[in-house]
Image (tube, rainbow, N blue to C red; front, side, top):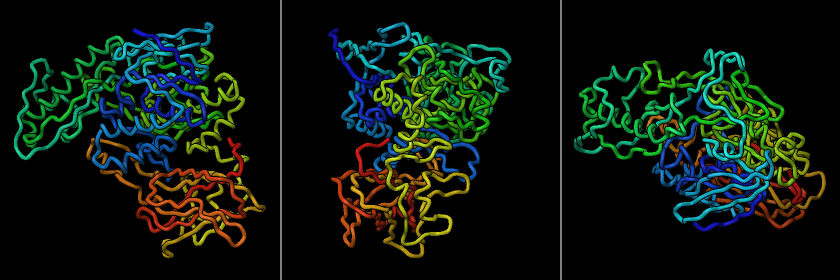
Length: 595
């Protein structure tokens, strides 16, 4: 083994969705990042190795018209996938994530490389990560100022001595009615998924001798299996074991269960319509749900989630149900899940850093939460926005030369940085002092009563309750339509941000489930502005500084050489299908300084 030493600002361990979003967020804030991932592809449970679709707050409950789909980096990735992967290929999703990370000049990506230890600068401060890549016979010593554990299992934090817990808290510890009477080491189990395909002729299935057989549907109580194209999340096991140390045993047993379910469908005689269906793919990497949860300055709990808590130091949000499974998994005779709908709730910064390791953030399913609250925060949509928050916070720690705990003194700045990057925090609106649009007058070619043009300046980037918070042009007037910001003085603009409507009230993700897929629009979202010109107005002259065609993204940033202007005009020529132009926000900057 040869040894390489790397020096960087931030190390992110774990390249699942939390780690990908954390690394991209930190890099876009201008700091150097090394992303260490122990698999050959990025994406964690969403990758081609596991193939679970990304669930989030948009998949649960009555939102009272609130747009709940996650924005920021995750929305950017989902929109790219919807447009460029209509065939719903798991490998194309792998490629998209790889390309996005590789395209960030500030990220050094180390695939097939696992964190095996740390070196400490002091008992409460990490100096470097020790990592190993067997494929290249390389040992890495990666030194940094700030570390982010997005490894799921919390390997980095555990090696550093960060406090964590496993299993379930007792009911009295946090006053949680959904917790067991006494604490225990039981967890949510893991799942192996499979994908099948229908052919034009019968295809037999000969099962290995070691499968677990389910002779009749009575052996699978409460577990619907009438749709066969995509395997079953309820093929779950390992909740009564050590989900880390017993990982190989859990995988072997899950293969026996998953193939046993498919054998039941094909060979029990209960499902004769399955004759032409054949197994296309089965995972050999279980999708793990639960292992370590770190202890932060605050521990999110059932009350916070169910009451829709709005923390002053909120940096991300959740909204998936409290989704708890029996630890026995597929062997349980009880229903496979108990889901309790919750409102949207903030996740505070204090849940994202260690209370005893001074330079350690964490993001993903390992954040500081009780087992019950984790039942909501653990899904990948929520993990992604938490990752973006942690990566941004890590970058701000570098820039301000503070520890994660000291970052509380800069919470408003952190929140504004996140909003500027299209994240959402409940109760926080745009207050960027460098955004000239906030003091401009706004006018439009047309509007409708529920979509007044003044909404563009209210600092909100999604519909909340009954407020649309967007400009909507009159659909009867057709195109082109325009909206214009008029400044009280001449300005020298050099940067403009546009936030368009992408149908946040709908789910959008790559899924191999046909029924879930039917709820989505795979392609450019019809509400989104497709063709537009961005113009700087100075006197009677209008200079077009951007002419965009075939746009499908929600958040569009335009940077250009500084020009004098008295107004900024967006001219909309077409959408991707909607008869109205729809814009949430326009920001305008004349200085390179900004939040």
